[in-house]
Length: 266
Image 1 (cartoon, one colour):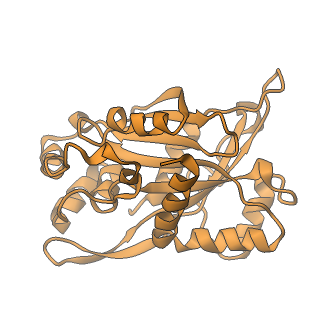
Image 2: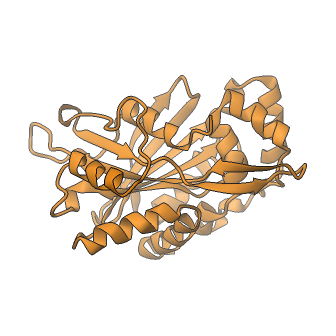
C-alpha cells in the first residue's frame, strides 16, 4: 500500500470515531484554509504481535524513516517518531505501553487480550486501523485497567487505530498562531484539553501543541454493561525553526505527556 492510500483509509476510520475532526476540518476549509496533517499517533502494547518492533517494518516499507526515541516514565510508555522524505506526508508517532511495569492483576487482563492477537496481524498496513484484536473485556476489568493506566483502558476497547490526527498550523494562511486556532475552536464550542494549560510547549522549545478532548462512544462490555467512553481527538501543532533556520521535525516529550490526557475518562 502506498502512503497516500494508507492515510486516506486511516482518515476514514478516524472520523467515524471522531466526528469532531470532520467538523473542525470543514470549519477550517470553509475559512479558505488548506488543512494539512502534521502527524498521526498510534497506541499499542509491548511484547505482542502488534508492538512497535512489528509495526515499524510497515512504515519503513512506505518510505518512512526513524527520527527519535521517547520515554514516559510515569505513564510507563516508550515511543518512536518517523518522517517521510515527501514532506506533504505526516509524521508518525508510535507509542507503546510497557505491560511488564503494571500490577500483576493488570498484566493478567492485558495478557488475556494479547494472547488473542494473531501472529501475522501486521502482514498488511490495514492493521493500523484494525481496532481490537480480542474479544471485549468485562467492565470490571476495564475499570481495573483505568485505575492504573488510562492508556491501557483506552486500548482495551479501541485497539489499534489512529489515536489522533494533527492540523499543521504552519500550513494555515489566516490562523497563523496557536492562540488564534484555539480562539476559533472555543468560539465553536469544542472542548479543549487544558492539562498543563491549553497550549503545551513554547516557541523556545520549537513546538507548540494543543488538542481537543476526545469524542465519546457508547460501548457494550463483555458482561453487557454499557458505558460512554472516550474515543479519539484532534490536535493542532505549530513548529518553529531552530538557530540554523531549520524547522523542528521531532516531538517534545513533556508536551506529548499532557496530550495523552485528551482521552482521559476520569
